[in-house]
Image: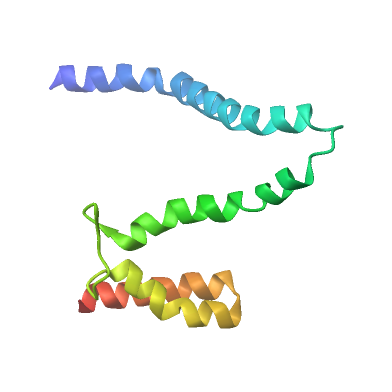
Length: 120
């Protein structure tokens, strides 16, 4: 039993240094990819085709992150009524389109998802 607590004490003695190092490394890893393009392109004019292309990047990334969770179940396409995330999205879409409110989307989506998860 003493060995367990001794290993726990030793593990905790390094945790602050490790945590601060991890926080610093993560901050640096997220800062640098944002900083360098802005610093390099600060005084340059981008071509119009490139600027137009950049407008498609956020929706493409959003789609790439969201649609697999909505449409795939166990790695296969699932368009049935037991696909709760897809059914939730279809049910709250009119509310979101009408209100254009993130808060309404989150509250309604969470509520509908919970109800469907308990019901189905």
